[in-house]
Length: 377
Image (cartoon, rainbow, N blue to C red; front, side, top):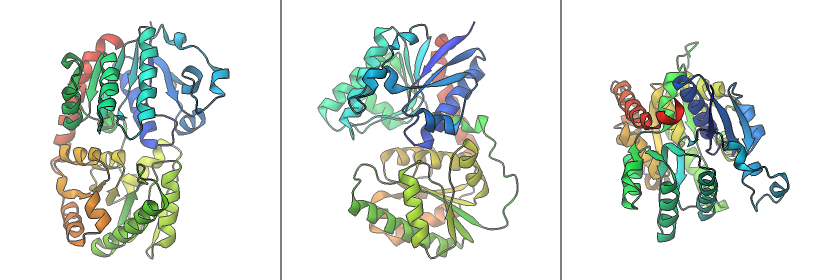
């Protein structure tokens, strides 16, 4: 007898980290029970299907089941969510979830979760990040959303403590890890052909919360200077860019390669292989993307992060590598002493403790996930 699962998340918005998370979720679920099948909700079928087509899960567009004022045509295409009434569980598989950079997004998830509870579908969050929640109203909405869930597995201690602080039912919350930590169980990071050149891989991102011409220009100029410093100080033969967002990051990579006076280029991503291959082929990785940092550490690469957000800092803290992280303030001010210190820390990183840390985080997540087995057996 097959068990049906509804996968939520942010697939289809252009962030390949979200597509990766959905891919890992399907791999994990079918490894727990080969008879699991279901539906992945996506904001854009073409984007998600372009990345990966699953044999046991199909894609369905969010707007078919949750009409939006942003897409008026969705009201004419609406299909009831009652089609999911026979499903065993709805799972939100990791990533950043509840934060008040966008109040509309918070309210949108509240509406979705209320609808799912009306058809009596259990809701499980796996490895999500929560926060920042800076206003009383956002905390109230977040609390209501989380109390609609049957199990909330948080990916870091900061999220865990925040959720406890806003008085979510303690029996529902568990400390786990980001679902991406399980990537090494399903992905081969080994290098097929050893590189003869010393390659630096840069995984950038546009600063999304203050997205204007002045900030975009500052980001491009500072990142170009930092990459040039890294190339000079660490003596790379070439520097390549990996855009992990289908739209904004591609534009950023194009700008970077056009202004740098060093050998450089950038990859184009369509599939899972297009993410893993550049990471496996590189010697040193500079990443602003959360899942770029995580995949780099999982692949055993010397990694330097730039923490535009607390979640990057929390991840580096879980891996005991705060010294390999450039804070946003130091990046914006181009504090060369701090930057060179981080270069040295990352360059001299033997990574000997990383496999043990990975095992610890994987165990923490899988132990927390055992609470959801009753929906998957």
